[in-house]
Image (cartoon, rainbow, N blue to C red; front, top):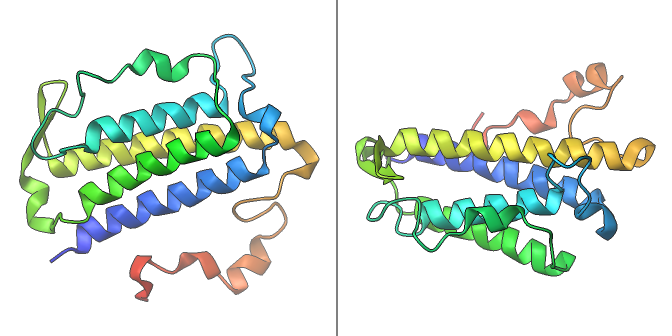
Amino acid sequence: MRELVASIEGEYRRYQKLGEAALAQLRDDELDRADGAADNAPSAIVRHMAGNFVSRFTDFTTSDGEKPDRDRESEFDAPHESRAELLARWEHGWSVLFAALAPLTDADLARTVTIRTVPLRVHEALHRSLSHAAYHVGQIVYAAKQRRGDAWQSLSIPRGGSSAYNAAPVHEKPPGGRA
């Protein structure tokens, strides 16, 4: 059975699409712009998420999730990538994640993995990773919305649109199409 794993995977896919929709609204010059010295540009968040996914989910069940060759600090350095290179990095991170999820069943959720030598059940590691992804996708969406201002196209229910949406809630269908 794979109901729980499929549900988690569906949420990851939802956040992937949300991040991609926000990134698509940014101009190239906005990808690398941080609001302040302590803030991360959307491109830095993309590099960090991709680096995290590759580290955590390469050999997910057989090696520590913090790989020795990962240079986490460099993920936040000033960018030197085109939009195409950045999006290829983004896609690679997600593809490593989804490849690791593909063989998992609900029975695997009780297995143990390690992250930075700390043992976690697979379900704990997945929930931790999913919330990490949601947090950072939220940062990308917020940054994109701030940069686009009035040109921003809502990625959810726009202000003033609740009644119309509630009459036809097209985005409420669960993953896998079951009602």
